[in-house]
Image 1 (cartoon, rainbow, N blue to C red):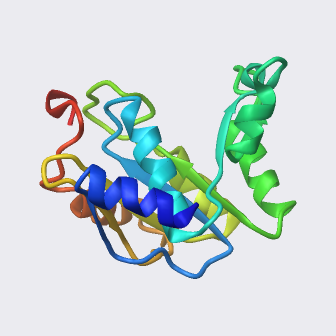
Image 2: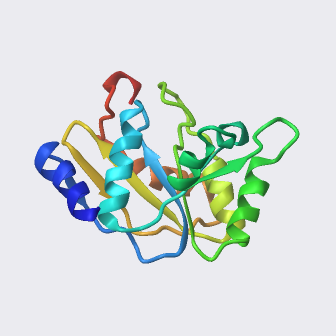
Amino acid sequence: MRTISSFIYCRLLGWKLVGQFPEVSKCVVIVAPHTSWVDFLIGLLVRSIVGKKVHFIGKHTLFKPPFGWIFRRLGGTPIDRTKNHDTVASTVEIFKGREVFRLALSPEGTRKKVEKWRTGFYYIAKQAGVPVVMVALDFGKKRVLISAPVTPTDDKESDMEKFRDFYRGVVGKIPEYT
């Protein structure tokens, strides 16, 4: 499957992969900018090429029949995201219960343009004691950039600035949402 994914990604689509996915069994992977449903497809190709299982969380209702098995097969884990449930704490519990869990999240929390990133990914990484790996989907230059793992410190503002710096100049599929 890796060969087929690489052929599609590199030869047919003309994209490049910059960086290597780190050898970590647990991490939070922040993927940005997230501006289109196409991001998910590019992510699946890259995941296949790097040969690492990368997971995602989704609202629990997505995992019901008849299509729930597809989301699970793609690496999805159901989570109750209603108001009465603490999504960060629930996600940290998933990390604690698994030997391997690499969680991909969009720091924007939506495909639309946002002025400020959500910080749940930061608190999940901090409370689970796992690093953050940054992945940039640069449609402007047709490349995906992968960072080395970064361990969050106690200085959230400084950490967030480092994370945002990694994505400077990166253009999403829908540039006006970047």
